[in-house]
Image (cartoon, rainbow, N blue to C red):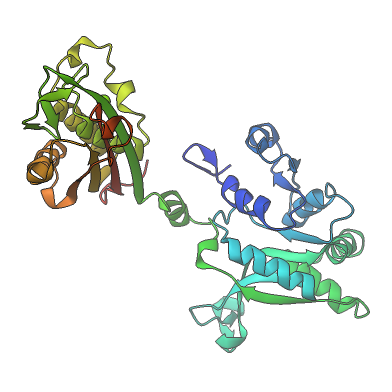
Length: 372
Ligand code: MG
C-alpha cells in the first residue's frame, strides 16, 4: 500500500470522492491480505468499505461492483495510484456520464503517438488531435457498467481490456441496441499515475514544498519586571510575568516555527516546569526552535508578527526587534516583519494588564537531499 506521511495514499483521492455531490458510498478495493491494514483508515468514511480485489483489474472492479447499493445510478471507477484527484475533474466526469452514459478524464498527448509493429517498426502515426491519454475517474451508468462486466465474465473471458472504458466500448460495439456513449472530458496533470520510481518521488514531494505555521502567546504585565519583546528591552514601568523572560513575541514566533514543521509546541519542548528555562533569554529558545526546524529539512522563508500592547509605543523598536528575531533564527531581517497595534482599550491587552503576540511563518522545503 503506497503511503505518504504514514497514511495510505488512497486517502487523498477518497477524501475528494466521498465529498462529491450525490456520492452514496463505495468500495476501496485492495489486494488480498491488505484488508485489515486498510480498514481502520476508513473509519471516517462509513459509506465506504474495504473489498478484496482479484487477480486482474476487471476482477477488482467486479468485486467492488458487487458491494454497491442497488439504487445507484452512476458508478465512478478511480485508480488509487492516481492519488491527487482535482475536485472539478470528478464533478465533470459525473455530469457528463449522467448525460451520455459514460465519461472519462483524458488529456491530449504532448508527444506524437505511433503504432509500432514487429521489431519496433513504426506502422502508423495517427493525428495527434484525435488522440487522448485516458486517466481515471471513469464514470458510467451503473446498469451499463454492470452489463459490460457480466458480459466479459460470462461470454468474453479472453477479451483484452486495460480499463473500463475499453471494456464498455467493446460491449457497446457488440450490443448496438444498447444506448450510451463515452465522452472524454478534460483530465488533469495532477492525476499522474504512480507507476515509476520518479512518479513516487513526485507524489511524496507534492504539497510538501511549503508549510505555514501560526503562533500565539500572551503574558501578564506586572511591576518589577523588565519589558522584553523580540529580544529587545523596552523602557516601561512594568514588564511581562513568566517563568522565562516572558518574551511573548519570541514565544509566538517559536511556536509558529514548530507548528509549521509539525514539531509540536514550545510548551512541550521548553516546559515551564524545567528549571533550565527559569529567567531564560527567549532568543535562545527561538534559536533552538529554528535549529529543530532546519534539522527537519526546512528553511525559514518568512516570519510576520503582530504585538498587541496598549502601551508603550512600540514603533521605535520594531526594526531592532526584527533584527534580534532574525539573528536568533539565522535569517535576514528582510525576512522578518514585526508590527504593533493597540487593543483600543478593550480586553486585558487594552486595559494594560497583558501583552500578546501572534506570528505566522512560512517554511520552504530545503532543495538538497531527497525525501526520506
Ligand atoms: Mg509564553
